[in-house]
Length: 161
Image 1 (cartoon, rainbow, N blue to C red):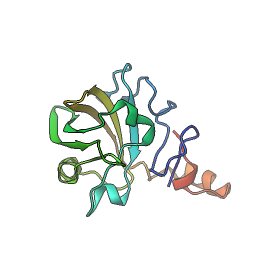
Image 2: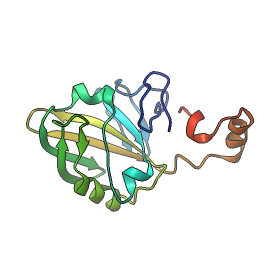
Image 3: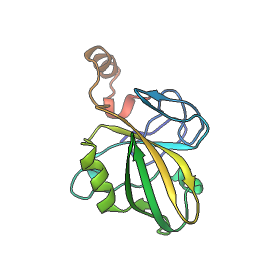
């Protein structure tokens, strides 16, 4: 389980391209990029996120920016959209599992992939998030892996981008 230097969370998490989660900034990822003026959060996908339970809970630092009610959630990646529910009125808000599972399967998401969620619209009526996907974040170049291991760390605990 990883934490960022700023946010001690129990969720898999990282700084993304030198920016702290929840901050505004610009990240370019292939043909997809964050707009640069919206709040966002990122998740390094774990087995729980992509296998039988298909569970995704936004990190605590972004929750004040998200609805405190159950509302329609629209995830957009590229030119496609997925509709599901955001269950924001529970003690631990989450994405509705069946809809998240469709998103995971349609995008062939795997453990170790990362998703960056940019908040495009967040009201008491709807939540819209643009998603940037980074593939295979757990597969590190051998030189970097040996440097990490020589310091007594593992990729799961040592890496911040």
